[in-house]
Length: 133
Image 1: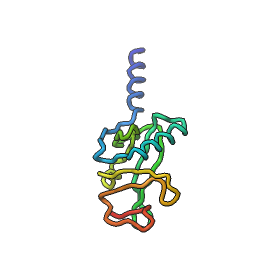
Image 2: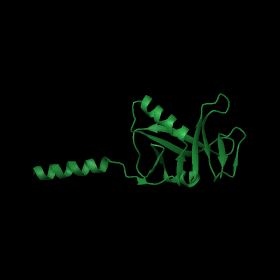
Image 3: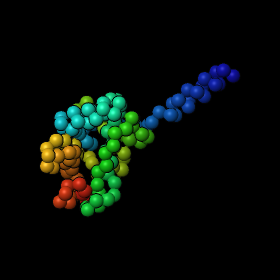
Image 4: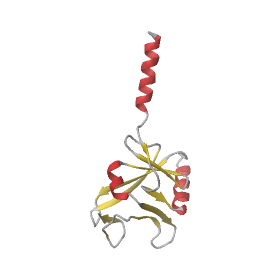
């Protein structure tokens, strides 16, 4: 009976771990400045081993926009990429839109912040916050 309980506990622990794939920088990569900024934000939030989630959602002037979030770990079905010392996760649907993209960061007063250079974007709006593919 004890062996059955141990086996069940091991099975539930395995089931609790997210199932994700490992990709490479051909999916998405970070510039040195973006890597440094994300790393410092993760550390500031108390999760230095966390991940940056990059997603594409409907909205914005051109129909699609980027959504970025800091999280503790990858979720099921995510694709995990390591770039500039930062773990970046992308869901499979968003991966169709961001493949080949580079995330950059600038702390400039005008036009500063995170910017995505996406070769798949057919058009983008004048503010640079949304795109169409």
